[in-house]
Length: 332
Image 1 (cartoon, helix red, strand yellow):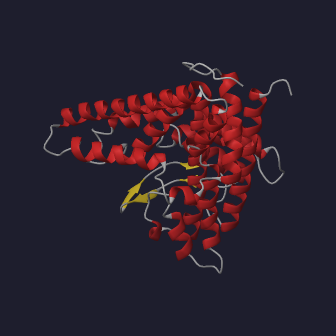
Image 2: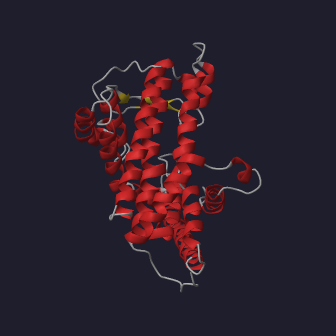
């Protein structure tokens, strides 16, 4: 195969095969720990840039209006840098004989199928021997609330909610934006989503500086969140253990009542599929945040429910990979 000229953009026919390979690689291998013991993960580098912007631009001495303007400039600058990096990287790889294979490896780095499974499974393992503290410690790594304030049911619900929400913004959304906009879109999305997790909070410090970041993150996750609910419902069809109809009913009935415009869709679909009840009032930094319940099931979640949620999650990842494969290889 000869050297190919750099291309400006990739069509779905080009991105889908790369995404399919990336999904398989991430599911099987995840993030190789030996690499990230020597090199920083790209998301860590993005986080460092966001932290620098927050530290140097979001200062209390600035007026509220200025902090909002600086927040807009900060996130647009970050997105421009991310988009440009993705464009240059794709342009360079497209000149190599096997550049698309390398690109698939890069895309896999920005997906989280394997790592999300391991983090949530660690919560279930923490309950071995009917012990709550190990499970609380494990769930504290994946949620923002104080894990020591959670009882067994609360810890289980927190793990399942995190699984549902992160399936949307850690897997479906980056896959969607890579499929639509290629490597520039993927890296820009991950930069935005990382920024939202760091500065997109409704706190005194970040209410204004993170305003634009939070609004843009809501916008970019609007379609993926709803796709996630449909994928979970489709995965629920694969076993009599789950309830696909209830997943759809919960999503379309309850999601709009969630305090997040997007998170309610995967959480409600997960709740319906499991026959559980998720979300509801939660405590963050000692402050109770009122939220609607998702689903009509039992609020008393058990460690067994985490196992069932992980089984549904694995099947949902498989459904998504098959769908991408059908786009990538329509002749099969």
